[in-house]
Amino acid sequence: MEIKVLGPGCANCAKMEELATQAVRDLGLDAKVEKISDIKEIMKYTMSTPGLVVNGKLKHSGKPLPSLEKVKELISSEV
Amino acid sequence: MLQEFADYITYAVIGLERGAALADALSFFIYDTIKIFLLLSTIIFMVAVIRSYFSPEKTRRILSHKKEFIGNVLAALLGIVTPFCSCSAVPLFIGFVESGVPLGVTFSFLISSPMVNEIALIMLWGLFGWEVALIYTGTGVLLAIISGIVIGKLKMEKYVQDYVWQMEIGSVEDGQTSLRDRMVYARDYTKELLKKLWLYVVVGVGIGAFIHGYVPVDFVMTYAGPDNPFAVLVAVLIGVPLYSNAAGIIPIVQALVGKGMAMGTVLAFMMATTGLSFPEAVILKNVLKTRLLIVFFGTVAAGIVIVGYLFNAIL
Image 1: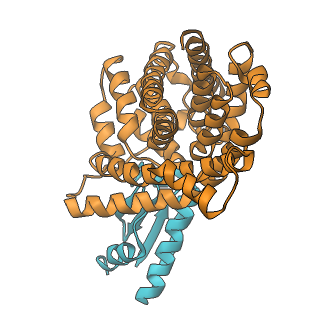
Image 2 (image 1 turned 30 degrees about the horizontal axis):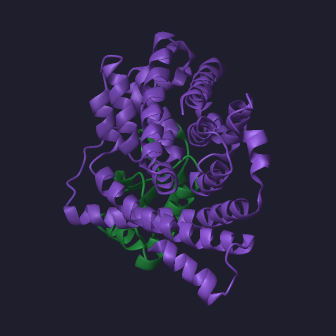
């Protein structure tokens, strides 16, 4: 499975990446979390960063960040 | 009641002498910190609930292909309630202009959104009263509308980076949100903000309390009082690098006002702090050519300076 964190590189985006990585670890999934900071790539999904994309689907965008529980839920809904 | 509590701690519990500078400063510190935290947590929560009904996507839909003027007015108002992280200024800008939001209207949004924010409003309301908060909101919105119209009239579309017009953008439909989700959102938002702000507030109020207790009136009157014609300009210049620390700055400014800083200068300073920032300029350089960036900054800065002098003259 493929997880992308969208964000040009602010504190919130870094936090989102941490959350996604932690969620994958907690769920024991074999998934790679990829950080996308290229604006062209981000715009394909959303204009509100930070964003979370799981298997090509936008699961979260914008502020405030979801909780770790919510991120786990979002990721497992695509497993 | 809060004042009594602050006095009780200062005089009865700690046992400082009434009228001493230290007691004055401490009582001021306790009173202001508690008041600000009460205001922040309740109002941010309420604002967050309101905000959950808005999203950048929805705002974009409302603004796209709107005529100028009406579009600028709507954009400046929506800027107050649409939640967005300052780091998404670039994707937001692209998303707006790509889907047909006029350039000037986009700028009205980008100007009002950071300037008229709930933190600045709460702090102004709590420390200066609702009249000042209202004046700040009114002038901020007006400034965003006028600056947007000016930029729109200048027909500067060719000074947007070329790639912006060729970008392929995805569209997301809004999901259903239950009331429970909104409450969770509001709670998380409030928590996140308080976590980020508390230290600024404490330090800001601390410095304010020090000024309140120790800095002489003459000193402030000379440099920031109504008789110094350069005070507004200097306030704007100092305000620009202090981006987004409204929570820490307003308590300091409040203490300075108590010592004679002019109200117009205060407004200009606040607006420069929240509305203009170097980091934002650097980020926006990705989508704006230098000329448009300078026009944007110049227009807003000029507007802020005018606001400062105007209010110094009438208040």
